[in-house]
Length: 312
Ligand SMILES: [Zn+2]
Ligand SMILES: [Zn+2]
Image (cartoon, rainbow, N blue to C red):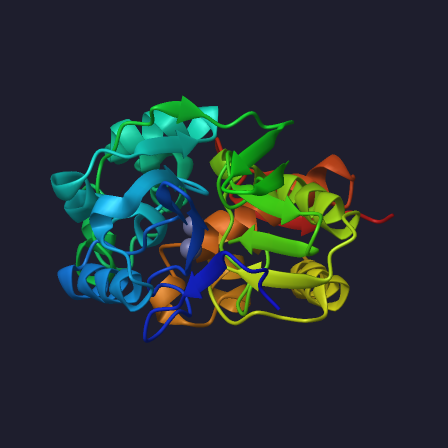
């Protein structure tokens, strides 16, 4: 399905939190990479093997487009930048995060669970970079070029339309190539629904981004995590349905009366692995949307510790 000149590198395991897929676009000068994957050395070595299987080396990489500043998409910059100095493109709001990744603690809302007294792992100062250090280490990188959020990106012989899909990251970029109908959705649509947090664009941002993706005449979809898919409309709808199913579940939990935020989080997200991140952050996104729609009210202490459904 991929047009001539574009190849996809999938690492051994690509389902999040594993390394993100890497898209390679060849041109007369060498290669463009869209994302570079995780900051684990073995992952980077497999990326280099992929390049050599196409008769290229890392020295041919003259441009890197990062869909957003997350470890599984740009961690490998730590190795790549030791060997080459490519142009680096990023959405403007992601540039400071890539330059100083500790700022991700703010966009990931790492302090949010503590505000509700949720701290199952007894963390003093939760740090997202530490959280990812074993899974997929992060790297810092300086962008050399800002992506125009309403514009196009010319890569090789292709002109990609930029589609911004916040929710998971404020500057998360999807790319549409009209000639082949390829829609590269990054983390907005994939085999699993990406986490979302209030400071990364929230649920409302996520749903609006999905609408923008659904409006594109895509023939096939390439996600950052998972496989190429021939039914883009169905995949986008599936993500939307999963988000709304979560909303329905939250309203069901509130049907019998008000529930404290920590208890609601535990009921909606049963997996203890996500009890601190991203469960509470996702729940807060849903409550923000439901409150704006007048369907729930959060009351009690600063951040609304008690959640109740309103009669509508
Ligand atoms: Zn991501
Ligand atoms: Zn990802």
